[in-house]
Structure formats: C-alpha cells, structure tokens
Amino acid sequence: MRLKHLALATASLASLASLAVVSLGAAPLPSLQEGKVIKIVSSLPRTGSANAQTTTMVNGIRMAIDEVGGKVDGFDIAYEDWDDASPQKGNWDPQVEAQNANKAVKDQSIVGYIGTFNSGASKISMPVLNKEGLVMVSPANTYPGLTKPGTGEKNEPKVYRPSGKINYFRVVPTDDLQGSVAAEWAKELGAKKVFILHDRELYGKGIADVFQKHGKEIGLEVVGYEGIDSKAANYKSLVTKIASTGAELVYFGGTTQNNAGQIAKDLRAGGVQAPFMVPDGCFETAFIEASGAENLNGKTYITFGGLPADKLTGKGAEFREAYIKKYGTEPEAYAVYGYEAARVLLDAIDRAEKKDRESIRAAVAATKSFVGALGTWSFDENGDTTNRVMSGQTVKDGKFEFVKVLGGSN
Image 1: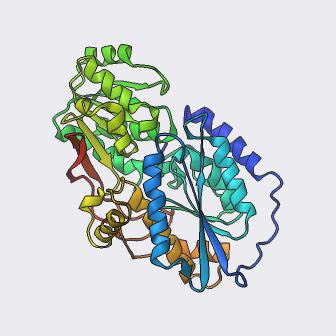
Image 2: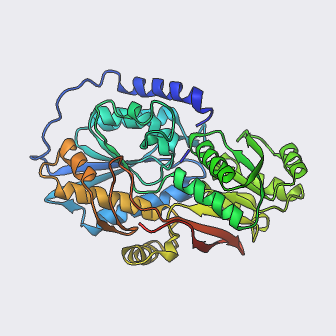
Image 3: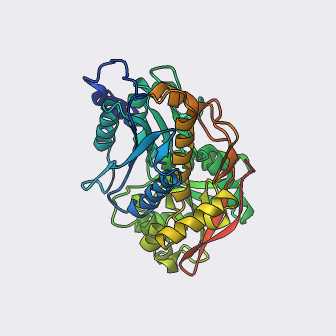
C-alpha cells in the first residue's frame, strides 16, 4: 500500500536498502535438505493503529500453517511474526524494515518472507531479499511500480531486482486497477466534479494519480488535487477550499494511519456533504472508529482489491467460517490475503525438489491455476496475481456494507 514525496523518497530508501546489505557478503547458501526445520517470517506493522488489521493477517498465516499440521514434505515449519513499525512513528518505519530484511537474509533457515503491508516498505526490503534469492510474497502491497514496467518511476521495477530474477510476488490486485474502477464508480454515482486528496506516500499518491488520470479520461472534472500533512490536527482550511469548488465527490488516496478519519470529520463539520471515497487502505474497522460512524453512514464509499470476507465463496467461505470459529470474530479485509500468501508459499515449498531458497523461489514463480481462498488464479510474468476482482463498500449503521463488484473476474 503506501512514502512521502516520491522523487526524494526513492533516493533515501535506496540508501537505506544499501545500508541493510552492508557486510552481508555473497556466500553460497547451505543446503536445507538435511535440516528438519525451515522458517517463514512476516514483516508487517504490528505497532500503531494498523495492528487490528495486521493481527488478523497474522491469524490467517497461522491458520494456513496449522492446516498442514505445521509440516511440509517432512520439514517442520517455524513461523516468526516480525514488526516493521516503531513506537516513534506509530506506523511502518524505514529503519525497522531495513533491519528486518537484513536479519532475514542472514538466517539461512528462512526460506520465505511474507510482507510487506505498505508498498513504501517493500521498496526497502525488495532489493535486499532479491540479492540473496529470498522469496517475498506480499498480502497487501498495491503500488504498480513494484512489479510493472512503465507504471511507476523510470527505474522501476528493475531497481528492485539486482539479481535479474523475480523474487517478489503479491496476491492482491494493484492500484492501476483499483484507481481506475474507483473513478468509474464515482462517475456512476453521479459525480461530475471531484476534489482529490492524497497522503503523499507511495501508495496514497499512486492511487490518487491513477484516479485523477482515468477520471479525466472518462469526463470527470478535477476541481482540486492536493497532498495533505498527515500529522495535521485538522483540515478546516482545506475543507473551506473544497466547499468553494462545488466538488460533488471527495477522493482520498491514503490510509487510515495517515489521518483519513480526521478528513472525514472535518468534511462533515465544515458542511461538505459530498460523498467521500477512499481506497482499501481505509477498509478496516479502525477507519470507522477514527472517523466516527455518524460522519460516514451513507456518505462514504470504499474500494477494495477483492471481495469482503462474507462474500467469498468456495475455499474463501471455508476460511471465513474457520476464522470465526477459531477467533470468535469476523476477519478484517486483509486476513484472507495473509492466509493466501502463506498457503501459496507452503504449496511452493511442498513442490520444490530442494528446500533451498532458489528452488522455493522458482516454485512460487511457477504457480499456475492455484485453487485458493481468493478463487483460481496464477502469478504472471511480473509476479502479480491474475485475480482482478474489485469490490465497492459503503458504511451503514457503523459497519461496512457490500455494494457491488467493480472489477472483472479472475
């Protein structure tokens, strides 16, 4: 999902990535064939308001491992839940993500890295893990430039692949799809004039850019486009500006953690009753809590790369039922993606002739027609899922409510 000032950020993150690989060396990996324990780790923001969402993702990962009895092809699977956030930021932290990537490549028993949650974090860890051949499966990154040439900055995604091989994969559809269907939905809802906001991070600005570009292509009038200060106490002056434009819909590209709730509050307090549309970075209970349900009910629309848990069928419905039985609550939106990321990684470990990093990476890359909780899908040549299903939600009585399918089938 999500890095301030892209042009400046790329250089600074590249520096962090370089720091992370200092003194790692390039010694050949020892064989894991004779060992009996192999490890999978996840790197997700476990500190701050994203915790509720990532806890359900970790629950999903643990469920996938439990389903195989904690063993694959005679090897015990050990799982470690790593935090890439810091108390100082209350969100993902570049320094912590660099430390996690560094730690992972040093431990030769680690054969899979599930993460990250935020796309900006992956910019740091991807080249570190790629250089050492450690496969990475993201359950949540949606920034297209991580994988798709021509969709991000000039050097993307080549800069993340120093080895020349693809080791990064994701089970969630990308923002070039979500931003476009969001613009189409805005038009369908009757909006002609839209005001676009973003949180200045990789994910938020990226999806706002897609919304803006496609919106103009289909005839929407963009009456404003601004990046916000995600640490601001309020947005009263911005709301006054939005009101003066006659905007018929306000779109925010960003996450709950970057003050989406405060924007919702200030829009309604400032008399702007236009619908408020947000992407999947706000599709979590924390967004409703931060906004106040009264500011969202019937006035807010949320897009999501997939279907909410209660609309999943087949293995997805089985996952939801098992999750509720085990944890006594509905899974958050990304729980099933954590589960699916773990399942496809375990499947690759099982198929790999050798249980070393390169064999497992190659097995993940060869994943085709995988029958999972998200349907039947494959990884394409870029490491992206072929699943293109999108959905739209609203908020009613303080809870998310499914509205419709927005994208195509997988």
